[in-house]
Image (cartoon, rainbow over all chains, first blue to last red; front, side, top):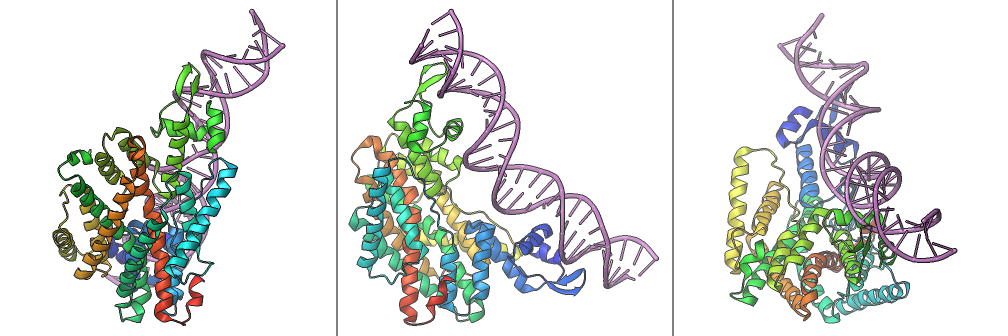
Amino acid sequence: MKISELSRTTGVPVASIKYFRRQGLMPAGKATAATLAEYGQEHVQRLRLIKALTTLGGLSIAATRDVLTAVDQAHSTESALGAVSYALPVPVAESPVGDAGREAEIGSAAEAEVADLIAAMDWQTPSTSPHVEGLTAALRELRRLDAAYEPGDLVAYAELARSIAGLDLDRAAAFGDPEALAEQAVIVFALSAPVLELLRRLAQEDQVRRRIAGGDTGTGAE
Amino acid sequence: MKISELSRTTGVPVASIKYFRRQGLMPAGKATAATLAEYGQEHVQRLRLIKALTTLGGLSIAATRDVLTAVDQAHSTESALGAVSYALPVPVAESPVGDAGREAEIGSAAEAEVADLIAAMDWQTPSTSPHVEGLTAALRELRRLDAAYEPGDLVAYAELARSIAGLDLDRAAAFGDPEALAEQAVIVFALSAPVLELLRRLAQEDQVRRRIAGGDTGTGAE
DNA sequence: GTAGCTAGATAGTGGCAGTATCTTCCTAGG
DNA sequence: CCTAGGAAGATACTGCCACTATCTAGCTAC
């Protein structure tokens, strides 16, 4: 199909398709002439994936490119999973607010917390994993707000995270088609986060209602 | 303290403090004269919270304002929790890609999926909850990618979400100080999401390693 | 042979989150 | 009393991002 058809099929403007190509998010169509190219079903699928990653996953164009590059280069499920996991942005930027002395204390406490957690969970985590650094940064930030986790709390969350990861892996592995597998991994890893977050919010909402059982929860929405 | 001191204490530029005030994220200092105002510890705390919400929570200025407004107006823990929960942005924007006929089918399937889930979980969810809509939209998007959850899967995730919400509520309730409670609720609700996500990624990483047990996972990082 | 695409390059737009400047005015030190 | 130095508030500017539009060739199918 021609680019105009691809545009009509997917609802993505021609200019945007060209933009995604320039940004390295999708391959060019197969050129049939100097000024004409043929696009196929894989382009439709790729556009859908791009849209899902950016809108549902909230990824930037750059992050989306990283993820898609990882998918394209993946030669195995595991490398796809790993690459995708690392390519996904971690929403942590530090805001070093004040107190040099307290900062040092906070920093080491957070680091110890993460190390203890990994030990307690018996996780096979490479020290180079960006997630370790990310988690440390997040915990530092919470400490600055005097909202540190109780030691046991973090482990409790981690246990649940482990169960979730188990479900994730099952889901990712359920797809036998090796062609689509890397893509499936992306979807499971990158796009179930918002679903999980929404489920958590719904569950929170339910818990709040149950715990007060008849209170003035009706005002919660305003 | 004067605004310049507040700036020095928190590391936030004076211009930014003024910007936050303009955007309604924090109250003005107590004016001691037409061109002089006094800032206190509460302003330091508020700046910390703003920074945490925007950097760690990834909220926009507008979303941060909504959340903080909810906190300031909350007269009870429950209303604070509810308001914060609703004020937090749900990362779902629809991208209606193609096929009118398939769209209708996808839409109703997703709606039924959510309704079934809520029934299965016995959740007390008001039909007006934006989370319901958000979840429906997210599931629609996944269906478009042919990545729908197996019916049981969604419930399994929801069960885990319930456990997480339980921990969240415990954490939020652990703070007796009613002054700080609404703020604590914000922290627990808005800022544990990235922590949980990071834990999930660490757990995924561990699972991948365990499941292949000796495979070529070393390349996962590149 | 020409109307209607197309590719690729370049430039422009709108929103967001600050950052800088400008004016007016107050305060503290001498 | 006078003046240096902030500070308040308003307005303007900047940089980044994700598109979006325009422009220049160059096919190609009727």
